[in-house]
Length: 297
Length: 299
Image (cartoon, rainbow over all chains, first blue to last red; front, side):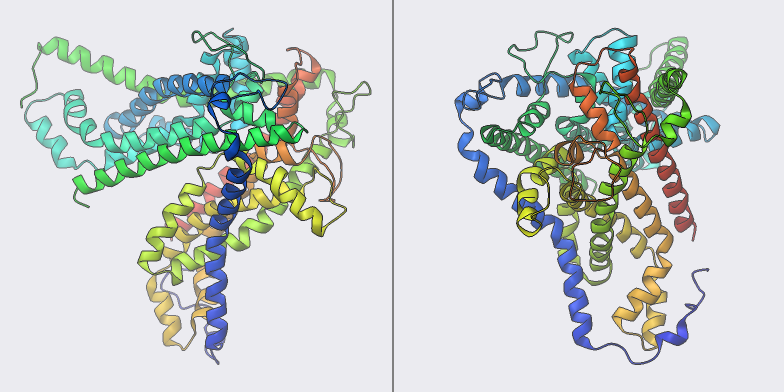
């Protein structure tokens, strides 16, 4: 059916329109549907804060895991997560930006570019737990990194790569073509144009994408569980080859224990996780707004 | 500010190196896909050298971790199907109605608030939703359904559905706003009301876009891990009863990952076989969704 065709069932459209009240009820139903996930999140947050807020204190933030919920803390998980996410960003951002620059600025339209593009959009749809299996066989076993921070960070980097690539490509596309042509006309090489003209203008977009990627990496538990992140760690990582725990792993462990005290710990851990994510997302929104203002949109 | 100009041969050589380096970055994603395929295929091959395909397809039990081992995939598929079906049953109607609200009813101001809020929801870690399903929703549901077990398919299914709503809303709204305004005006001119226009003109026209969103949601539900690993249980069971503990494919992989299964054993290989099955399902769904989305963009 092409766009200009009249609807096939047009004869049924005429006839008495339903009453105003019915329309209003439908509109209300639609609004309710739009608000439902927000309501659920509000209930979730309320519940978590009510259960866990009282548990957050200095002891909780600076203690290692323990058999007794009252003395357990998130130190190992939180420090592990900071290491993990820092390493992930250090690996994924350069590779992701490089890929985006290649596809937008260098690649000729052809079979290779199409192959890479199809690949990236397919990778974005692969369940995160499959990345865990990939990391387990490739990094932990084949490249014999063991169940180390580096293996975890490499796995998470592959997982978030499509996010960074897509955000960066979008940012690169907003840079006007005329600026590139002006640079080339002045005798600059392609790389000089990219590095001194195009990339600086795309920085806010790259930052937004990187922050989104990082917040995805912070909350991921499934691939790390498969990879063999530890749940009981009473030391801090001393390098990239160290075994590790992570905040989501710690929360998952507490959630799956039957004693009520651990559910309280899980709620407290979730508060820490959500506050971190909220701050990161806030930062992403602010950078995006600044970018839009600067580009005059 | 004019760029610094090094010697010509240095420049030409340097440009070539940089282009190769960038191509190298781009090839990382190709290598990733290849590595996933090779790893899953190799471990699956090794698995089927020890377990027959007919046992995998026709046995009705999945007990690789017990003394009496059975390797029938159906209990895990049933668990995955059950939780995903419940999730889609929640996400599709609510997600679509929300998309209709954003596309047809909302004022620009309301849209400007609602859209980013829904995007924010997509950023909540699924682990958090899993906690919510187990600790909050299941006890709540037990008041209404006393038969409901502590681990079940119903509660994680519902929570997963709520998690997927923003995705269907966002993709569905894209499809709805791609419907040309002239079609709506034509319907109004024929005397149709808002409801008739939405149900007889807008939604049918946006159908392929909506179908693409639905298929992508199915893929997302099938691959979702933490919600079901936390709240659905670890008992592979060939059932469609949403009140009893089940185990999904993803939850099985987590269960083995939590334990200390030595590498290279048959138990170790089972997670790759399950992973390969999961990958095949989600990959097919993603391809189908892309094809449907392309059809709706072409129109």
